[in-house]
Image 1 (cartoon, rainbow, N blue to C red):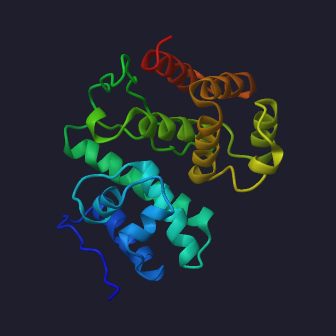
Image 2 (image 1 turned 90 degrees about the vertical axis):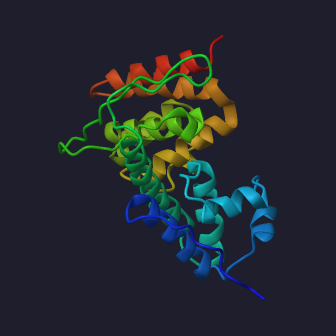
Length: 235
């Protein structure tokens, strides 16, 4: 008998909204079991079960992967769902950070270095692109770093022409970056995840350096991110 997964007892807030959205997408996908979802994932069935049933903030990567897989089963647009869940996760992460002590002190190092505390980068219209500020034990360094880099790239290259020029000079294949909308956080999260999956830390370094060369805006966040990357993964 197919059953829904148990919901955790979460108070009203962004984390609860993220969890309820996952359960709703799970329903629309036909309530696949955790073993079934694990077969299509790099994550174990217990890890996937925890995403639905735990009161802790799940990893961004597993949320994005589940959103993509469930969207396909639910006959929804996977890219739109991944972008939607990325935004929900950022809201939950920021809420979690405030609840656990606010946004005052910088993040502490996780792998031999540290991420600096960061202000929110500004878009051309003056609006802010949220940056997650998480305690290190709540998510691994790659989740935090990739979310921050995605937000900064969104603030610098929200227009297709400039985004495509930057990504072309950064050496990305055109058939990859022309799919999607550079004015969304999900687009840049996909780009950053793709670069890291193909060439790991060195690829992220080259991407940041290329962004600095092509950017006409404030490069302070790019310099901070590049230094943070080098501090976290020393030579």
